[in-house]
Structures are given as C-alpha cells and as structure tokens.
Image 1 (cartoon, rainbow, N blue to C red):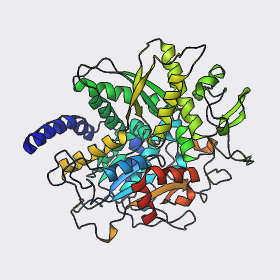
Image 2: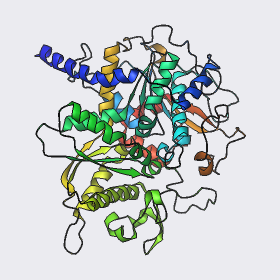
Image 3: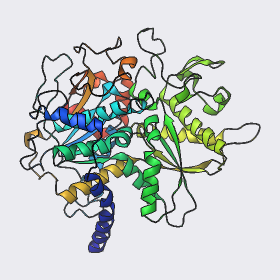
Image 4: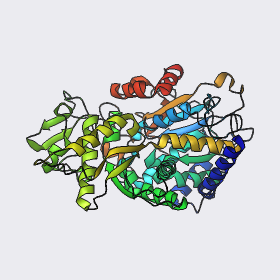
Length: 500
C-alpha cells in the first residue's frame, strides 16, 4: 500500500514540477532586475545596502536556513503553517502524517518589510516598478549577511546566515515580483529556489474541485495590488485546466486597508482619542476614495460596528473605518454588492484568503459573509442567492508549506539531523525607517510619511531609507501582538525565544 501511495504521489509531484522547472528557467531580465543585478555586482562582498556575499554558497548548503518574507507580519501565517506541518513521512517523503513535524530540523529566517507595507497600495499609486525593486531588496536581504542590531546602531553587522530557499509569503509580492526574483537569482547563479503563495493557493482551489462538480464560484479576497495583477484568476484557470477540471467563476475584492488595519498602520486605523496632526492622511474606504468607495446607500449592508468608526453614521462623508472588523465587513459587503450587480447569479461557495494577513481574521470574514447573506430588506434577503450557506475557505499557507517540502525533497536540501548546532534558533527581522538617512521623510511616530513612501521611484539604490533589524515585539502594535499570540502559537513561542 505504501508503495502504491508513494508512486501516485510521485506522479502528482512530477506533474506539478512543470511550473517550477519552467519558472527556474527565467526569461529575459526586466530593466528593474538589470539595474538591481548591476548594483549587487558592484559589491560582491555584500558590505553595502541591498547587496550580498555571492560566494556564500560555495560549500554544502543543506544546513543553511530557509528564508521567508512578507510586506509585514502577515507572512507569519505562512511561517506558522510551515512550522506546524505534518503531512509527509520524514523518512521516505511519501504523503501522510508520521507524528513528526516535517520541518523539525530546519531553521528559518523571517523578514517583514514593516516600514514599506502595505505592498498592495503601490500599484494603485502607479509605483509598480518601485514595488518590484522593494521585493528584490527583500530577497537580497535574505541572501545576505547584513543587518542592523537596532534602529540607532552606528554600523551594520554581518553575521546573519544566507538562505538556501526563499518563500514569498506575500500574495502581492508573489504576483508582482516572483518572476523578478527568479530572473535575478538566475543572473547571480546562486543555488536558491523560490516559491510563492499564489500558485499554491490556486492548487488548493483545484484540489477542492471534484470532477463532475457543478460550476463553482470562487471569491478572492486580496489587496488591490494582487487583484490588479489578475494573478489568481490566471493561476486558478491554469491549475484547473491542467487537471482536466471545469474552471470556476472567479470574482475578486481588492482591499485598500484590511492588511494595514491588521498591522495597526495609522493611515488606516488609529486610536479614537488620537490628536496627532502629523499622523498622516486617512487612506481607507470613504465616500471620496475611488479605490475604496464607501456606498452611502449600502450602510445597512455593511453593518458597521459604531464602536469601530470615526465620524457620524448620519453623515456618511465623515465616516472613517477604525477597526479590523469594520474593514472586513466593508470588503465582504462590497464583494457581494459587486457580484450581485453583475447579474450572473451564481453563489459564492469558496473564498481564497489571497493576502497572508487575512487568515488572522478568518472567522471574522466568515461571520461577515453570514451577516450579508442574512441581511433583510423589505422582508427579502437580496444576497441569499449569491452567497452559499456553507463556504469553503482556501488558505494558501498550508499549500505553500507542502510545496516547500516537495521542493526540498526533490532537491535533497533538508538539513541533516544534528547539524543545527548552536545556531538552531529561528531569526525574525523587520524593517524600520532609517531616520539617519537625509532623504527620508517620516511621521511623528517615526514611520515613513505617506507622500514619501508612495512617491519614490526605482533606481535610487544608494539611498538606504529603511534598515533591517531583529524583530521587536515592542515595536508592533498591541493589537498585532495579540493576534500573533492568540492565533500563531508556534511563531509566538519562537519569537519570544529568539529576539525578545
């Protein structure tokens, strides 16, 4: 029986390798990649910002850590899935749990680009190429040894290990930068492979669809940037087509603020008693925000909690969302309103959490769908026909963890038991604004000013306006710390044992 299961599993894995092998053969470099590669080659020792030691992989790389990055803390949901995974037999790599964590002997380096988040807003600001440059900087950090011990340090340190694999634990970064990273790693000739969450999420949808199913309707909740790239509809269509299954209808909702609200970004959420005039403009949904338009006629459908609002419900122009729950309710209701307006009439039965922050509020998302479905108007339920009673949730995190295991097995890159030594701890890093950089413009709280953040252009690689430091829980908003502690127990334990 084990031989049959292993044979079937290997056949599936070989079929899946079409994507990864093709991706490894990166095409012609874009201008953003060319400029970045040229920059790194100017300092092959990795002493300058956004460079790395290109000789770091000259010996056995199996005992190097695995790198994971996101635009903020959302990617920690992917890290949690990787740390918790028990889906394979560790001895022969066949599918099925064996009571042992699949990555038990692996070390990880996590990086959250907190200073530059949320990534989903850069395409809206017309800064797609700058976003790609940010994503390349993330990869260069994981590949390098360079970091700063704290925001006030006088000089960087160079004792961080490089990585043997990169997991892009960010949907927007996968959609806009995975090909760029693969092009760059091919140009650098480093033996590092790259996987992302979008293809993994699409595969999750494909596996949930059974042959002979009636047409399915899949809703993708993601950032504006991810939805604007059309990455999920394309990947879902490709995955189901190759599997010989009927492609589902895919509808999308690009969130302009939920990820930022989860992170506690003051551009999207702030204390009700805040009097800081330098906190920056509100960037969330409003009656004036074209990217996140608040429909005055749909306030009852949104079902906002008044405790999580600034302004007056009687004056829609004054409303500012100020709680994670209200951002969730806005996104789900807007999705339902737009889908109903198409007249297609199909019921949403599957939801893809297309932003790695969103699993942190999975239950709130399901509650919001239930609220909209149950909404009554003149004795009728106008959304009952467009939202299924039972919704399947696809969290790309677990699929990404499984894909990482398969690739590690295929490439024979697992760390050797006992080789972890004294450096067995995982490391967590985050970016902060570099207040010593003369070009940087910050708010009163030390974060990048919104005009500065979204006004930058690619190519200024000599300007280190953000620096990478060990992640400090004290620098994260209390609400964010609470979410990590309550919903990501493996990550929380390791964060406390490592950096704090």
